Image 1: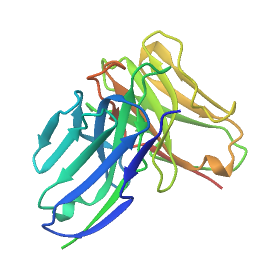
Image 2 (image 1 turned 60 degrees about the vertical axis):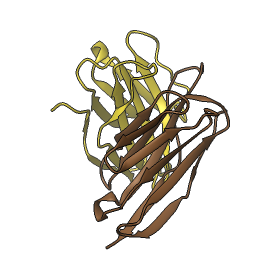
Image 3 (image 1 turned 135 degrees about the horizontal axis):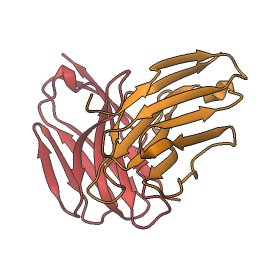
Length: 113
Length: 115
């Protein structure tokens, strides 16, 4: 079945630093989504990507849909303490039985003031 | 509220008991999903409802798990004869449809603890 690898698993950075994380899939996707999850809450959608090569920003966040359709990255510029949380990528492949999302295992981000 | 609502937010029960978890999707969303998230893990797909179509149950881990969606809105996930390995956060999500361009929006989950 489809697999999705997300890296790094965790990051511990200084406030103000830029952050980059990425996901790769074993097959091509038609959708890439990036979510953030805070403790005790559900994932919140950050950025949605629907076209290969698409580059989309949301404030300090920028994400791209890889041209191979098998990868995506998320960058966070000038990190702040409230960026702490777990970031999940999710993708949707072509066809498939249910069209549901496949999720990465998450990148846990810790920011040191 | 305008978001996906799940209840209860926390549930503690003894091994062997049955539990019911409820999800109220965003009004007008025809697609509804259930996921399970174990501690420190990603999201594991359980079941998916789309309109009046037969649900996709391919992610349910055993026949102790079942879900219903009445009237195309509220959904209930039922776990019978709970086991300790069922302890996890159960997340519900909804979307306008299941196609491209219709991302899922999540509730805050039900944290289930089996003693």
